[in-house]
Structure formats: structure tokens, C-alpha cells
Length: 181
Image (cartoon, rainbow, N blue to C red; front, side, top):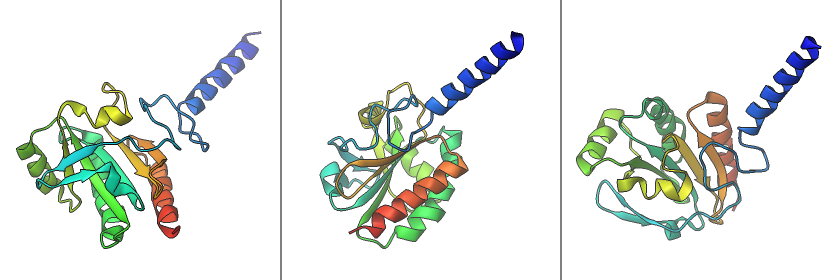
């Protein structure tokens, strides 16, 4: 009897862990997201660290990567060199791709210093009060996450934390989206 109970508990735990991951159909998971794959990108305007503004309306017809980050986030710091090398450098000359890091709850001087320290060339936007963050995820949810938006303005991929296999999948989603007219 104990053997069957143990097997049952293992199966239940396994199913619970699987349910926490993003599903191929884009079903909502429990990673703190308020949006899911297939949802339209929420409407917003953000201010970049260089003073320019960018609106979600500017995304139509483009593939967009929004990377939520912060200077105090260790996982973000581990992920950002990969984003710079594997995504920004590959697509920086394309007019149909936008990559923006969104720095949560930090002042302009800190965001500018952070960008220099991380040696990134993609722009960082300011997110005082985590207002942009809360359009996509619960405020108390962890900061490290990426949102990929397709040309039609709909969310096509969501990540949480930095995991190599998921990052590779995200790169493929971006490449596939850019390959489509």
C-alpha cells in the first residue's frame, strides 16, 4: 500500500510541476503572468532612458521583445549578455524587430549606469512604480521575464527566469516570427 501511495504522490508532484510550465497552446500558467499567449499586447507608452518615447502602437507590423529587468536582479544580469549577443546583435539592423529592456522601479541615473555596466546596446525603458510590469504580471511576481509580441500585436511567447532551453525556444520563436511577412 505504501508503494502505491508513494507512486501516486510522485505522479501528483510531477503533474504539478508540468502544470507550472508554459504549455505549447499558450494556456495561462502560474508564473505570475496576467496575460497569456494569444492575448493582444496591452496598450501603453514608455519612456526610454535617452528620453524618447515608444508606444505599443509602434509595435504593429514588427516582432517585439520586451525584457523586464532591474539592476539588483541577479538572474537578469545573467540573462542580459545572452540577449545582447544572441538576439540584439543578430537583429539590430532589422526595421521589423524591436527589443526593449524595461527596468523596474529604478531612477534614470541608475538605469543609465546599469546599461553601461551590462554593456548592452539595446534601449532600456523606465518603469516607475512597476506600472508597465503590472500590465503583464502581478507586481509581487519576480522581475525576470520576457514577452515576445508578433507582428499582429498578439503575445506569442512568455518566459520566466533564465533557463537555457527556454531561451533557445524563445530565440526560435523570434526567428520564426521574423521569417513570416
